Image (tube, rainbow, N blue to C red):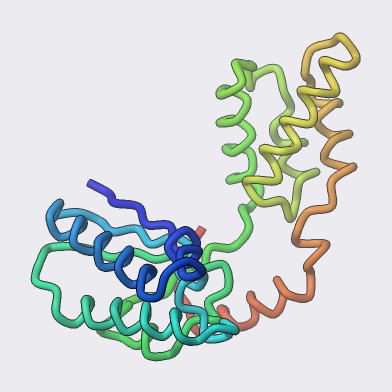
Length: 204
Protein backbone atom coordinates (compact mmCIF):
# COMPACT_ATOMS: atom_id res chain seq x y z
CA UNK A 1 0.00 0.00 0.00
CA UNK A 2 1.28 3.50 -0.88
CA UNK A 3 0.33 6.71 0.93
CA UNK A 4 1.14 9.81 -1.14
CA UNK A 5 2.01 13.13 0.50
CA UNK A 6 2.46 16.20 -1.71
CA UNK A 7 4.80 18.49 0.18
CA UNK A 8 3.95 21.56 -1.90
CA UNK A 9 0.34 21.23 -0.69
CA UNK A 10 1.44 20.85 2.93
CA UNK A 11 3.75 23.85 2.66
CA UNK A 12 1.04 26.03 1.11
CA UNK A 13 -0.96 25.96 4.31
CA UNK A 14 1.77 27.87 6.16
CA UNK A 15 0.27 31.12 4.90
CA UNK A 16 -2.92 30.62 6.91
CA UNK A 17 -2.42 29.74 10.58
CA UNK A 18 0.68 29.37 12.73
CA UNK A 19 1.52 25.70 13.21
CA UNK A 20 -0.97 24.39 10.63
CA UNK A 21 1.78 23.12 8.33
CA UNK A 22 3.30 20.96 11.06
CA UNK A 23 -0.15 19.68 12.08
CA UNK A 24 -0.85 18.64 8.49
CA UNK A 25 2.43 16.74 8.37
CA UNK A 26 1.86 15.07 11.74
CA UNK A 27 -1.61 13.99 10.62
CA UNK A 28 -0.17 12.48 7.42
CA UNK A 29 2.47 10.62 9.41
CA UNK A 30 -0.15 9.24 11.80
CA UNK A 31 -2.21 8.02 8.85
CA UNK A 32 0.88 6.29 7.43
CA UNK A 33 1.52 4.55 10.75
CA UNK A 34 -2.12 3.44 10.97
CA UNK A 35 -1.88 1.95 7.47
CA UNK A 36 1.44 0.17 8.03
CA UNK A 37 3.01 -1.77 6.53
CA UNK A 38 3.07 0.76 3.71
CA UNK A 39 5.23 3.02 1.58
CA UNK A 40 5.08 6.73 2.42
CA UNK A 41 5.74 8.66 -0.78
CA UNK A 42 6.72 12.30 -0.13
CA UNK A 43 6.57 14.22 -3.39
CA UNK A 44 8.49 17.48 -3.91
CA UNK A 45 9.89 17.34 -0.39
CA UNK A 46 12.06 20.42 -0.92
CA UNK A 47 8.89 22.56 -1.20
CA UNK A 48 8.23 22.06 2.52
CA UNK A 49 11.73 22.04 4.01
CA UNK A 50 13.88 23.91 1.52
CA UNK A 51 16.98 25.35 3.19
CA UNK A 52 16.71 28.33 0.86
CA UNK A 53 13.14 29.17 1.86
CA UNK A 54 12.65 32.89 2.59
CA UNK A 55 10.49 32.00 5.60
CA UNK A 56 12.66 29.68 7.67
CA UNK A 57 10.12 29.37 10.51
CA UNK A 58 7.64 26.92 8.95
CA UNK A 59 10.39 25.10 7.04
CA UNK A 60 12.48 24.51 10.14
CA UNK A 61 9.49 23.35 12.17
CA UNK A 62 8.40 20.95 9.43
CA UNK A 63 11.97 19.63 9.21
CA UNK A 64 12.07 19.14 12.97
CA UNK A 65 8.75 17.30 12.93
CA UNK A 66 9.90 15.01 10.13
CA UNK A 67 13.32 14.26 11.65
CA UNK A 68 11.76 13.44 15.02
CA UNK A 69 9.31 11.05 13.40
CA UNK A 70 12.06 9.38 11.36
CA UNK A 71 14.11 8.81 14.52
CA UNK A 72 11.29 7.63 16.78
CA UNK A 73 8.82 5.79 14.53
CA UNK A 74 8.13 2.17 15.37
CA UNK A 75 5.59 1.38 12.64
CA UNK A 76 6.68 -0.46 9.51
CA UNK A 77 6.62 2.56 7.19
CA UNK A 78 9.12 2.74 4.31
CA UNK A 79 9.70 6.36 3.33
CA UNK A 80 10.47 7.47 -0.23
CA UNK A 81 10.90 11.14 -1.16
CA UNK A 82 11.31 12.98 -4.46
CA UNK A 83 12.95 16.34 -5.06
CA UNK A 84 13.40 18.40 -8.20
CA UNK A 85 16.41 20.16 -6.68
CA UNK A 86 18.14 18.14 -3.98
CA UNK A 87 20.68 20.91 -3.36
CA UNK A 88 17.92 22.83 -1.54
CA UNK A 89 17.53 20.10 1.08
CA UNK A 90 19.20 20.46 4.48
CA UNK A 91 22.20 18.15 5.05
CA UNK A 92 20.77 16.74 8.29
CA UNK A 93 18.01 15.08 6.28
CA UNK A 94 20.34 13.49 3.73
CA UNK A 95 22.76 11.67 6.01
CA UNK A 96 22.89 7.89 6.09
CA UNK A 97 20.49 6.44 8.61
CA UNK A 98 17.79 8.91 7.66
CA UNK A 99 17.70 8.57 3.90
CA UNK A 100 19.67 5.42 3.19
CA UNK A 101 20.20 5.98 -0.53
CA UNK A 102 19.94 8.84 -3.00
CA UNK A 103 19.00 8.03 -6.60
CA UNK A 104 19.33 10.37 -9.56
CA UNK A 105 16.72 9.87 -12.29
CA UNK A 106 17.95 11.51 -15.48
CA UNK A 107 15.96 12.29 -18.61
CA UNK A 108 14.75 9.13 -20.41
CA UNK A 109 17.11 7.46 -22.89
CA UNK A 110 16.05 6.49 -26.41
CA UNK A 111 14.62 3.08 -25.46
CA UNK A 112 12.65 4.59 -22.60
CA UNK A 113 11.30 7.37 -24.84
CA UNK A 114 10.00 4.72 -27.24
CA UNK A 115 8.16 3.08 -24.36
CA UNK A 116 6.73 6.44 -23.27
CA UNK A 117 5.41 7.10 -26.78
CA UNK A 118 3.95 3.60 -26.84
CA UNK A 119 2.17 4.11 -23.50
CA UNK A 120 0.66 7.47 -24.42
CA UNK A 121 -0.43 6.37 -27.88
CA UNK A 122 -2.28 3.40 -26.40
CA UNK A 123 -3.78 5.71 -23.78
CA UNK A 124 -5.20 7.80 -26.60
CA UNK A 125 -6.51 4.72 -28.45
CA UNK A 126 -3.92 5.00 -31.23
CA UNK A 127 -2.11 1.92 -32.57
CA UNK A 128 1.64 2.27 -31.83
CA UNK A 129 2.39 -0.09 -34.74
CA UNK A 130 1.23 2.68 -37.10
CA UNK A 131 3.96 5.03 -35.86
CA UNK A 132 7.73 5.03 -36.30
CA UNK A 133 8.56 4.94 -32.60
CA UNK A 134 12.30 4.73 -33.22
CA UNK A 135 12.24 7.94 -35.28
CA UNK A 136 10.08 9.69 -32.69
CA UNK A 137 12.43 8.63 -29.88
CA UNK A 138 15.44 9.91 -31.79
CA UNK A 139 13.77 13.25 -32.57
CA UNK A 140 12.76 13.76 -28.94
CA UNK A 141 16.24 13.45 -27.43
CA UNK A 142 16.39 15.54 -24.25
CA UNK A 143 12.62 15.40 -23.70
CA UNK A 144 11.10 14.44 -20.39
CA UNK A 145 8.12 12.09 -20.19
CA UNK A 146 5.80 15.05 -19.61
CA UNK A 147 7.17 16.86 -22.67
CA UNK A 148 6.62 13.77 -24.82
CA UNK A 149 3.03 13.61 -23.60
CA UNK A 150 2.46 17.27 -24.43
CA UNK A 151 3.88 16.76 -27.92
CA UNK A 152 1.26 14.03 -28.37
CA UNK A 153 -1.49 16.32 -27.09
CA UNK A 154 -0.40 19.08 -29.48
CA UNK A 155 -0.23 16.53 -32.28
CA UNK A 156 -3.80 15.47 -31.62
CA UNK A 157 -5.00 19.08 -31.83
CA UNK A 158 -3.04 19.61 -35.06
CA UNK A 159 -4.52 16.46 -36.59
CA UNK A 160 -8.04 17.54 -35.64
CA UNK A 161 -7.47 21.02 -37.09
CA UNK A 162 -6.29 19.48 -40.38
CA UNK A 163 -9.13 16.92 -40.35
CA UNK A 164 -6.73 14.01 -40.46
CA UNK A 165 -5.53 11.26 -38.16
CA UNK A 166 -2.51 11.52 -35.92
CA UNK A 167 0.64 10.19 -37.59
CA UNK A 168 4.42 10.15 -37.24
CA UNK A 169 4.94 13.25 -39.39
CA UNK A 170 2.56 15.37 -37.32
CA UNK A 171 4.28 14.28 -34.13
CA UNK A 172 7.72 15.04 -35.59
CA UNK A 173 6.55 18.55 -36.47
CA UNK A 174 5.26 19.11 -32.93
CA UNK A 175 8.50 17.78 -31.45
CA UNK A 176 10.52 20.17 -33.63
CA UNK A 177 8.37 23.08 -32.41
CA UNK A 178 9.05 22.20 -28.77
CA UNK A 179 12.01 23.51 -26.79
CA UNK A 180 12.42 21.00 -23.95
CA UNK A 181 13.56 21.96 -20.49
CA UNK A 182 16.93 20.36 -21.22
CA UNK A 183 17.48 23.18 -23.74
CA UNK A 184 15.73 26.05 -21.95
CA UNK A 185 17.47 25.27 -18.65
CA UNK A 186 20.56 23.56 -20.05
CA UNK A 187 23.02 25.13 -17.62
CA UNK A 188 20.92 24.22 -14.58
CA UNK A 189 20.43 20.62 -15.70
CA UNK A 190 24.13 20.24 -16.52
CA UNK A 191 24.97 21.55 -13.05
CA UNK A 192 22.55 19.08 -11.45
CA UNK A 193 23.99 16.17 -13.46
CA UNK A 194 27.53 17.12 -12.46
CA UNK A 195 26.48 17.30 -8.81
CA UNK A 196 24.77 13.90 -8.96
CA UNK A 197 27.52 12.09 -10.89
CA UNK A 198 29.68 11.27 -7.86
CA UNK A 199 27.11 11.63 -5.08
CA UNK A 200 24.15 9.48 -6.11
CA UNK A 201 23.14 6.11 -7.53
CA UNK A 202 22.24 6.57 -11.20
CA UNK A 203 18.76 5.31 -12.04
CA UNK A 204 16.69 5.24 -15.21
